[in-house]
Length: 442
Length: 66
Image 1 (spheres, rainbow over the protein chains, first blue to last red):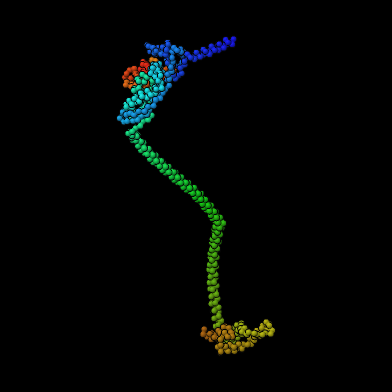
Image 2 (cartoon, rainbow over the protein chains, first blue to last red; image 1 turned 90 degrees about the vertical axis):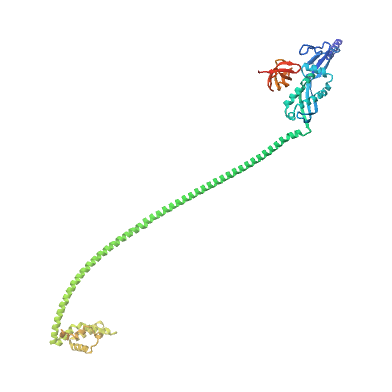
């Protein structure tokens, strides 16, 4: 049993080993080139045989001893190129570039490449380098420096035109040809860039200056705007302040107006009060006084009228009385004249009687004169008082009757002395003296 | 191969070797391209149809949309 199992295991192992020996698998990046017994495949056109078998992407059995298999790498390869060449304008340049190429994926390309490079895959890069340096010369000779730098379409197009057929012959395809570096001994490229650089620099300076100018202008504008705003603000402020002041002034004015009005009202009120309290009463008083004065005047006029009338009446009365008195006086005069005439007659007839009568008539005056004598006495001591005076006067008077002689003596004495009557008697004593003569004259 | 469509990546015209990208074998490969009508000029980006295939990598194409 164990022997059988062991034999089976060994057999399996032998089988696996055998399988591994005869079965080859192609990786995605390689092609198996199988040649040998029975290894024939139709080419793509199907007209003739390749003479070997190309397997890609799958496995196949290779009979050991009868067949052989080789691997052809299909990876892309890069070849550095360095070439001294001349451009279309005749400018010598030193160019370094890289070409990226690979074996074509189609069977034709693989067959071509297998036939050429299968045993020399390591030397492929050298061959390609030689090939492409030559091609690069022709490519660059058809281009200008500007194209070389800028025009990639032109570059690839020239590459295709110059290298297409030869690469097809080799079964290779060019993925990319890149110019890495261009060394320019004449300074053409530098000079080429110089106008542009100068232009760019000038443009940059211009732009900078313009931007500076713009910035300055903006700054100035902003400052101006700021100033304008500030000015507007100040103006508005001033305006508002003015308005506020105006409003205050108006308010003050209003207050003043109110006060004035109040004062006026007060004054008016005072005036009215004064009018009512003072003027009206004053008027009333004045009116009263006027009325009173008028009344008084009227009264006085009435009085005056009355007085005038009275005076007239009195004048009339006086006149009448005067007339009456005049009449009376005249009558009395007449009567006196007659009396005097009569007395003169009587005197002529009886002087003593006349004198006596005269004396009797003048007795009061005489007494008075006598009394005046007493009146001149400063201190008259009358022992019997008032009665004593009466007695004395009575005695003096009683003496009269008998004292005619004395009287006559006195009269004559008076006449003889011609003394001043004022010294010791009344004036009426004087006419007595000439009277005796007067009737004569009458 | 013939009848496949492709996109022009290098200008095709008389005296030029153009390039078209054609989907083939599960990938996209570049082929040298020439116009079917020698006077045609086909700009980059144009869709073309393969009229003739010249192995290994040359095709003759015509614009796909007239």
